[in-house]
Amino acid sequence: MDIKCLIIVYSYHHNNTAKIADVFSKILNALVKAPDQVTLEELQEYDLIGFGSGIDSGRHYKPLLDFADRLPETNKKSSFIFSTSGVQGKAKVAKDHSLLRQKLQLKGYIIAGEFSCKGYNTNHFLKYFGGMNKGKPDSEDLKHAEEFASNLLKELTLKTI
Ligand SMILES: Cc1cc2nc3c(=O)[nH]c(=O)nc-3n(C[C@H](O)[C@H](O)[C@H](O)COP(=O)(O)O)c2cc1C
Image 1 (cartoon, rainbow, N blue to C red):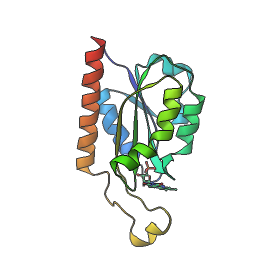
Image 2 (cartoon, rainbow, N blue to C red):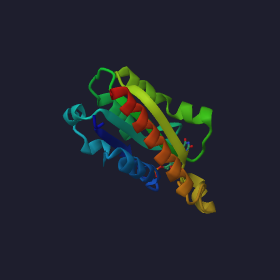
Image 3 (cartoon, helix red, strand yellow):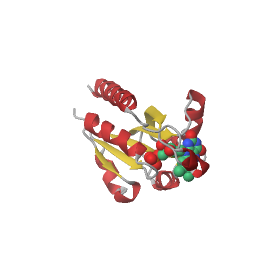
Image 4 (cartoon, helix red, strand yellow):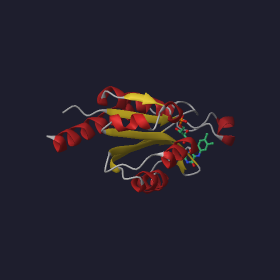
């Protein structure tokens, strides 16, 4: 069975998260849309939904979190979470993802995987010093994104056969 996937991404600072979404879309053969381009009805057509954005104040961007609040309940639909951020670290990313994770789980989504990597950041005073993580996500990050999506696809395909 072919897994039908939609990727919902909100990315504005340097389009860092959009670059990751593009890699996912190729591997998962998925459409990429911004939250305001998605109708709640069309979500029923998909087996797997990816939710991603940059991180602001330790959480996903507000338009994505607001979208998660509007989601109808599902019965264990598969999903995945992703982000790019200025600062990484296993515990920090887990915390950054926690609010979106909670919101999705509350609506009945299963989180099949989570991905995050560094993104170029010129927020606030950083812009006066050339920003942090210049060039990120880089080719290595895009390769990791590709591996993440391939593994996810393999796992979900195994579950459906
Ligand atoms: C207003 C603002 C707030 C941010 N807050 C955080 C933060 O709390 N933690 C962090 O690690 N990065 C933070 N960043 C860095 C962004 O998450 C990072 O640059 C991200 O890759 C931007 O994604 P985008 O280009 O897809 O919008 C912030 C950036 C902006 C512009």
